[in-house]
Length: 312
Image (cartoon, rainbow, N blue to C red; front, side):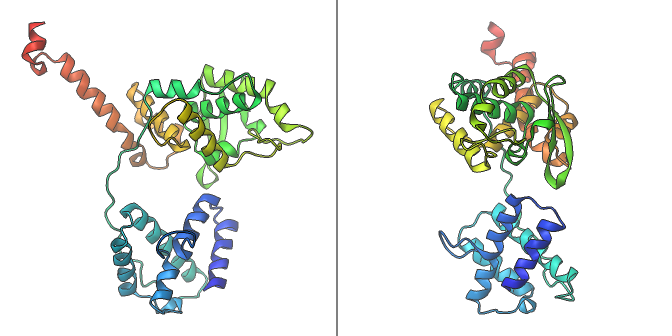
């Protein structure tokens, strides 16, 4: 199984060009995470059931695995992701001729709970962005990366992969390589452009030292900044800003989309800026627009006002 799994990971990397983040998730979903908690990986479950061969798996075993995860209290969204990883693995087995049929192809995923994305208010966003000390090289860098995530709705993986030549400050544009190596052009406003210019003029060269590279965001050693470090940076400034929420890079991306729609932006424009393949993925953010529409309706329609409002 390990040899087959290693071939599968090589296939994802070399032929499918899957992101490191997705490979990490698929590895955890199939092999399991040995660092904490109960054994939730698919291969771990097979070992518990003393199943030593891939072709011994059938629909009944997969149903047992899903029930096992539910009994452990695993969230439906996580179960759906694990099932997706298993399907991908079995499609690879069919492709390589290791199996002649897929016994789990028709297995339905559990219905996911409709969870609305969290986001920051405009006041919280402003407080977060003004927290770094821009008198220091690190503060200039940190202010710039937060401005870019919020201004352009970037994924953290897109942010850390940016190179200098992808930035066009004159046009207020950045060429981004997103999921599936798809390119898109994102826009930035004056605050983000100024933060980027300040970082490039007054910070990056100091962090770079004697090194030479084209990485846009770099760490103390002059190397490309990691996703984990970006997360730590956001956590630090969120605490300083007194924000009582779990602030992470994707939260700023949620905030970008929510603020655009709340300001009246067209849904398809937001879809293009986010780099979503399907409009349905973007539609989850319309809850804010609907809430705003309800507020406007209650305050503007004469028959929706309370008696106290009419007296005024």
